Amino acid sequence: MKLARAIHFDESDRNVFHNPARTGEWCISGGFEFSNWTEADLVGKARQAFANGWLGLETFGRVTFVAVTRIEPAEAAALEAALAGHFVDLYGAPSEAAAREVARGEIAQMADLCAEHDPNTLLTVARELDAGGVREAYRTLAARAADLAQLAVHLDPEA
Image 1 (cartoon, rainbow, N blue to C red):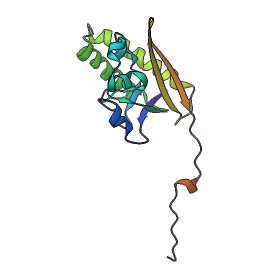
Image 2: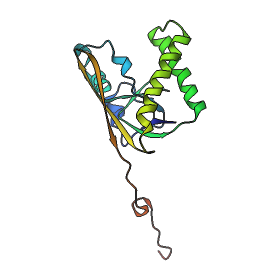
Image 3: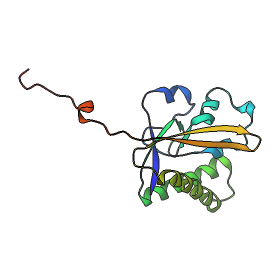
Image 4: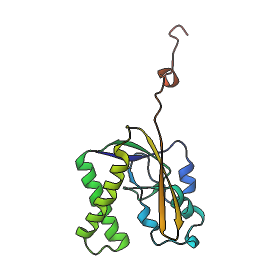
C-alpha cells in the first residue's frame, strides 16, 4: 500500500500555515476540516490551509507538498487509530468505532490517490468552495531522475 509523507523544499510552510506539518509525517487530504466553512472563513492563513494544505496525521498541521511512498500495514493501522482519536477529541465523534470507520475511509481515499503513482511522485491539492461544498483537485509532479553529479561533492585528493 502507498500513502504520502509531508515534504518541504523551503521554509514557506512555516510562514503560510498556522500549524505546519513536520517533514516526513504521513498525510491525507483532510478536506473534512472545511466541510462547514463559508467564504467568511477563508482569510489569512486559514485560507492558505483551505486552498492547498494536506493534513499531517501526527501534528494535524498542514503542508503544501506530499511525496508518495510505501506504508506498512502496522503503520496504516496506527494512523487510523490516531485519526479516529482526533475525530473523537476535536470533532466530537459519537464513538471510537464510528470514528474508526470514517478514519479508515479517509486513509483509503488517500491510498487510492497514491496507488497509481510511482514512489517519490509529488502531489498537490487545490480546493474551492462552491454551492455544493468543498471541491478538491489533485496535481502530480513526477520525480525526475537525478544525475549523481548534481548531488555529489567531488574532492581533489591532490589539493
